[in-house]
Structure formats: structure tokens, C-alpha cells
Image (cartoon, rainbow, N blue to C red; front, top):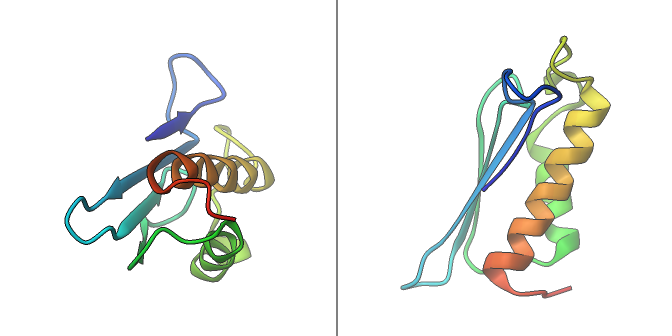
Length: 96
């Protein structure tokens, strides 16, 4: 998982969790804290970087990123995409 906050002792601004199924190789990516609702993406096999970006872009509309004292929507979106890609590489290999 990856977590980011603008403050050391504050609410999370971004939280991304990844889980790779050791039996079937599927990958689940869950996003919360940065969005107005939790978002869970499931892939039958670890996706390419482009497929992950496309899935995240489709799953979270522009007006569904939190905008408050804990982070601007642009920062939350950027960090969410960054952390999701890090998790994809860590769990699913570096498929392009």
C-alpha cells in the first residue's frame, strides 16, 4: 500500500492498496482518502501502465477528487496515479 498526507499528524490525503491473488494472478487496486468514495479496480491479470491509467481515469470523475485542507484535487489525482503505478510494478511486474 501507499499513503500520503500533507501533514505528519493528519488525515490521509491519498491511500492506495494493491492485492495480487497468488492463485489466479488477478490484481485488485483500491483507492480511498483521495476520492469522495472508495474505488476498487479489478484486473484478471496485472495490467499495463496504460491500462491502469485508463481504468483509474474512467473510474474517478474529475469532480470526485476531494478538495479540502488536506490536499487539492490535482495533487490527490497525481499521487493516486503515481502510487497505483508503483503498486502495479511492485506486485505485477513491470509490464509496459
